Image (cartoon, rainbow, N blue to C red; front, side, top):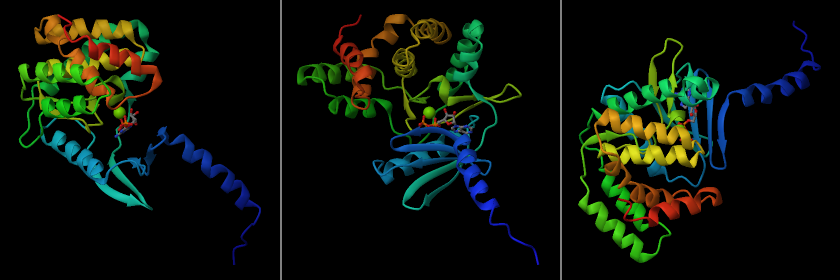
Length: 268
Ligand SMILES: Nc1ncnc2c1ncn2[C@@H]1O[C@H](COP(=O)(O)OP(=O)(O)O)[C@@H](O)[C@H]1O
Ligand SMILES: [Mg+2]
């Protein structure tokens, strides 16, 4: 009979949390993203509505059905009392890390980033909601004065609705570059059909909010060039996307900037 050593137990117990910590990719108040048995597990806290989690999984499945390279959803499950989404694990580095570690070639990576976004715009999907409807609801929920919200609703109504697939949270942390140099786009919870220029305005805003101002400006120039769009036609979406974002992001760091942009209704 094998002897079981009682001495080993405390050591193993000491190692376990460290190994688990290494696999945690992101930890927020109400969300944990971690590597789990060669897959990706996104664990949602109680503030998430079950319908929002199921919707996120549904959006990811619909994005995969367009034929774009994504991390496929494997299952939606409950671990204890927590709802989770399990995805395929994609080996590689996020484009955000690639950019950070090789700042000299920022322009090259931004060009690739824009090319990926344009490939997404070239797709559409049946039975996916429209971005304008989502923006309209978010404007209603924003902390802006009633008059400003009214102006923004009116403005939005006069803009094209569009049918292009818009990721909705397109930023370099949501693009993974594999060791072979291929790309995958992840995190499709906000995807909708809409006008590509609205999605470009939101990505520009996300660069700003993350403090990457030079990258924001360079990105905007490259996106306009790739889409043959005029800068004012993208800028006109900024108050709309800023107002929409202010309904979600109420962090003291970003709040003022968002409200300022949202209030510049006549940016042209
Ligand atoms: N399928 C995946 N394979 C490898 N890493 C992933 C995968 N999905 C997410 N990640 C990593 O986890 C991070 C957070 O995941 P994400 O789904 O984007 O969560 P959030 O909604 O909080 O942004 C990503 O930026 C990426 O670094
Ligand atoms: Mg993400």
